[in-house]
Length: 133
Image 1 (cartoon, helix red, strand yellow):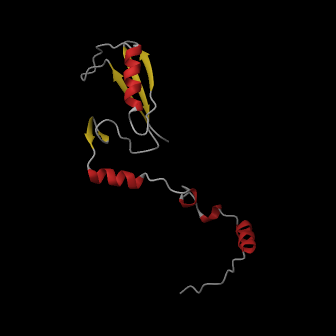
Image 2 (cartoon, one colour):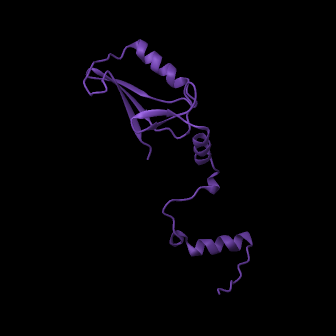
Image 3 (cartoon, rainbow, N blue to C red):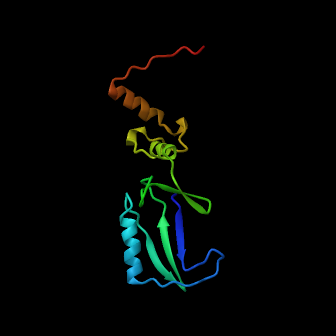
């Protein structure tokens, strides 16, 4: 299940609340930033007491490009991704056809032998025996 990240605007690094107001201008600026990412990032903005919460759900179309490149969060800091990191992320997140996707937790006990034999017969597939050494 995808995760969620929350940015708190109006909170100092030491955890004290400085306060921030969610104005129409701020909404417009944040929405402009998210629309300039590729693909677009959907965020939820809300005023929570004296703090503005920007809730960012984990995206399914990784990697995302915002501004001057691709970035990733490592612990408490954000780093620009290297060429090798990008290559690996693109390879790990490339779309694959439905037929190539695996089913997690699948075992051969989940297959109906009767349905499999009916399919093999209808498809005209001849099943032979294999000698096991």
